[in-house]
Image 1 (cartoon, rainbow, N blue to C red):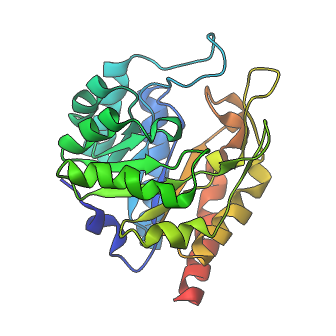
Image 2 (tube, rainbow, N blue to C red):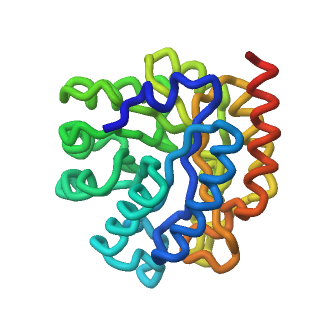
Length: 267
């Protein structure tokens, strides 16, 4: 079982990356294989990310997944095939133990970061718990979310910044929050792609600003983020979820090389 230290005690930042949602086995393995090749070459600790189900959708006809067990088994196969940890998000208390059988890190969605029972259930699995900061919360308020995990007997928590609601249809990132949250003693991750979402569009489909992925990622590394969260897909335009703000997979290596240079400069 991996711990916070397995990811964050390295000289480099670590990376959580993969598709928004598991669309199928071939796609997941193809994405994982390419990112593993890149991160091994660049000496970046890597966690494969993929949601086994999307519970928070704008419209009832939005794609939610291929089936819970099927998707979770694909996440396990990624782990077994490449020897890398995996992360997926959970939405209800009963999902914690189920998902923990297949993945190494349980992620709490931003809208659910204050749900005490959900945080405790995730903590009690013994897995690392990655809590996304609510778009409605200050950075300082996240200390209470991670404390719930610790009080449940699990010291392995991480915090992910993913932007703050700005008006009805936009998000902004307050980079002061990254060093502030690091003072709590847990790794802090920058969710680059979700921070560039433009939610609540009248079409019922979330928009995004992927042209700013490099800008947001560079700033996060410059202010000391321990890790980065990036959703990526070979063809974002045809992705079944969050395609509007994902990074095209072929652009990932060049971006990571630039970020390593920034990391080296601030060290």
